[in-house]
Amino acid sequence: MNKNYKICVLGGGSFGTVLANLAASKGHDVSLWVKDSDKALRINSESRNTEYHPELKLSNNIIASEKLEEIIPESEIIFVATPSKIINDVLDRLSDFSMDNKMIISCTKGINEKPFMTMSETIEKHFNNSSIKVGVLSGPNLAREIADEKVAGTVIASKHADLCHLGREILSSGTFKIYTSADTQGIELAGALKNIYAIISGYCHSLDVGENAIGLILTRSMAEMSNFAVSKGANPITFLGLAGMGDLVATCFSKLSRNYQFGWAIGEGLDIEAAKNKVGQVAEGLNTIKIIHSEISSSEIKMPLVSGMHEILFNNGSKELLLEQIINSEIYVDVNFDVES
Image (cartoon, rainbow, N blue to C red):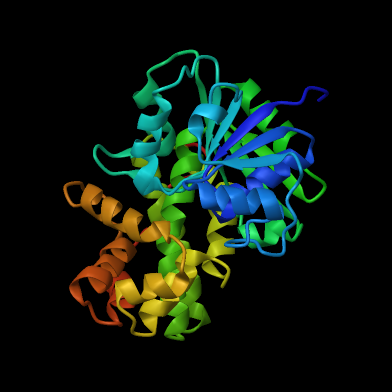
């Protein structure tokens, strides 16, 4: 790839900063949008985002700015790496600019609540512009490890093959492998749902439930994720891949995961606010578990782990409730899908 692209990364958090640096390190001009001018000034003067990655020297091709009007008009590719709770506000601000022929890749692992939509669906509905190409990026992407240039991989999914190809060319490196998929729904739901189970895993690890129980929880987590996603049109086979099993394993066993840390803190007896303060960053799974619990409350889909963790978080459920939910559930079929189905 010889062309240098003008790229915007919306969100100067942990993952957004890493994405910006990956693209900038390939020679592209990258604008990193942050919410306030002081933060932009610090990043530009120090070539570091000390709030999230104090040891990471940022490429000189990155310019941080709080001014969307200086960033969006000339950007060809936009990576959205903001918390899911503010996605609608961010999209409203983007509506002030022409978005014709731009590519937008959502990197946010969350769900929009009202109505229930993935991030890419939210973006497509908001702009309703056939010239905009939308995709998603998801996988086992612990930002600290990527910043440290430890080997990792991710998946870019879209119905637009050229978006997948371009995203791969822009972000891939000697330590960062990018795969592609056409199952946008499956890739995106896998990334959002696994945050719930990372909380559950952290919670159960803090209680020292035993390795057998962790194996049970991990496989039932995968079953719940895939069952729910298939009801929303996803391909169950997607969950055997990097964005499904890969991301689930990485975050369910990593103390670098914000959701795992949050679950661990809850298991130690902290309330929600204290656990959030201890983690210090957004744990997307907390919001996602509320949305998914509400979504299944009027359906026939059974997700005992989601129901149990929701009860523990919001209704003072007992510490034993999660495993009791599995043992006492009326689910007896191990794997619901086969290759032919």
